[in-house]
Image (cartoon, rainbow, N blue to C red):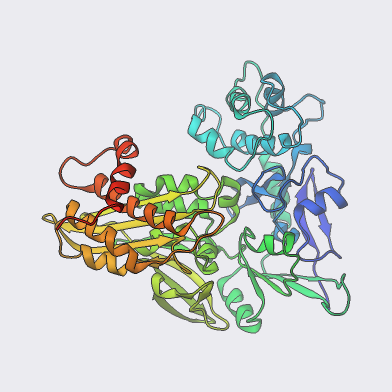
Length: 513
């Protein structure tokens, strides 16, 4: 079988790679093949950030985007047509340290140094993406940029100080990337047709060769999906990557969605926000939060920036995980999922898409093409809440979403959805029934809290016990009431102080009538 080589821009040249498994990670290639050992392996699952690199892509207009991602779970063929930057790229020919690195030295932001290259690359992405003259990034900007990097010894204060100090041009003259040169190189390797990489059999005849297909049009993607209905669909690799690094699974043929521009599109009309399945989680949440500002906290707490840069909303939805953080909010907002097979499409309510534990309504040869979310209604009261052991980059014990349409104090429609409470992301239909037609008051909220016991029988696992999950679910519904009630709604600072105490008191007594 004939194959094309993997082409990407790295250290000022276009590299061509062949003869490696399609699931070989970018980190493995850097350390074992290129001997660029500044990039480290810590967790091998995209959690610690020691492997952080920056990937650059140029669009048809010549605009270069730079995104920090985790090299440990990104497969090498996904670099085709892109640029790769590692910590080795930051030191200029003069031998002086880059402002990012020098600021880390001056602020004493490194001790053992193992995690430092990953921090430096996240900081460099922030540095490069902050246009000159646009002002300094805020502390929230810095926290977001560093959210995917775990500090093991220094503590974050000096690293945050370095992230602020690196922009001081009186101390550190600006050292900007030659974007024009990068764009020119990427334009020279841009593909106009499907990239086909045939990986050799490196593990014996029981596996054989495997193929990696990366189409650039929706028609080509749909055709290949019909032709290879059992090929592994790959988007951001934030879940599938762990199948390789942790479970050592053979993926077989891979069909990559990440180069299909039509599936990355995000569009609005008067009624609907349509998010293509290949749109990154970061871009998708930016669009969702523009319509629903209530999603802002969930956006920043959904994994980390490198994961959101790589992962896709379509992948999170199609994965079918009961703890996927996007699904409760989307279900509460009455989102619909667009499924496609060849040229035919069908649309399902998202809550009807999940049939069982990691089982969806996808038929053979189908794929998720888009997610459609209604635009905000003026009478909508909407909130989402995530409860986890860590604030940043953690899996939810419970993720809740509540959406009520209230007219003249009466609940015309109620949609309540939870993640982490059942085998699938699931609506609380009994709680919804307790709310519909009622006045939005404490009595209705307490009645719905009691009804949650008929909606869910949560499991106990390492993240939380069944009893804890049920209590938290009730508490969150009460918090929602406190924040959105007509009379004296509590501000967030007040809710944090009072909501959980009130919910806990309710859990110990029957609701009033």
